[in-house]
Image (cartoon, rainbow, N blue to C red):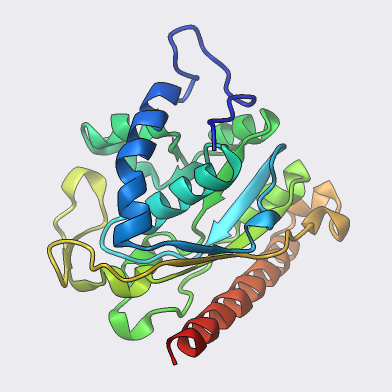
Length: 258
C-alpha cells in the first residue's frame, strides 16, 4: 500500500517536528518487507479494526531483548493502512546515538505528554506498550503474562477522546527472550544491560491480532483523565481486553499447529 501522508506536516526541512522522514520510511519498509514476510512470516488478523484516518492509540503487549515486536507492528500497520504508526518510546531511548536519529526518521517519539498531545491533535496513530521495560525484561517463564501495567494510555484516550485498539502480538515472546539482565550497567540511561538467549531473533512466526476499538470516551467524561481511580479502572478494561485477545490468539495458534 502506498504511504499515506495526509497526517504528515512538513516542518520545512522534509521532516516533521519530531524528525519523521517519509523517504526513510519508504526505504526502510522496502528493506524490511522480505524479513517481515519470509523470516517472521507475519500473519495479521482483524486488520479491519485499524483506523484508516483520525487519531487513535494502539496498545500492545511487549517482549524481546530489543523492540523487534514494535518494528513488526510498525510495518504491519504501514502495509495495511499506509499510515505511519508513531510508537511512543521510553525517554532513555533518546540517549542512544544514531539509533535515536533512525527511530525519529521512522516516526518514533519520546513519551512526553506534550509529544503525545501534539500527535493526537494532528490526527496521528500512536503505539503504546503499557508494560514498558517490565515487558521486555520478563523472564521466559512469564511469556504472555502481562507485567506491570501503566495507565497513561487510558488517561490519554479519555482526555483526547480517541479510541484504543488492542493488539495482541503472538510470537515475539518466544523469538528473542532475555537470558540475563545485568543491573547497574546503564548504557545511555537504559535501566539494565540485556543478554538475549540467541544472538539474533529466532524465526518464530508472528501473529498480530487487532481487537475491536475500545471507546473509553463513551463511559468517561474528559475530567476523568485527572481522576487516578477512573484512569486505573479504564486501563484495567484495556488490560483485560488485550489479555483476552492474546489468549485467544495463543489458542488459535495451538489449534492451527495441531
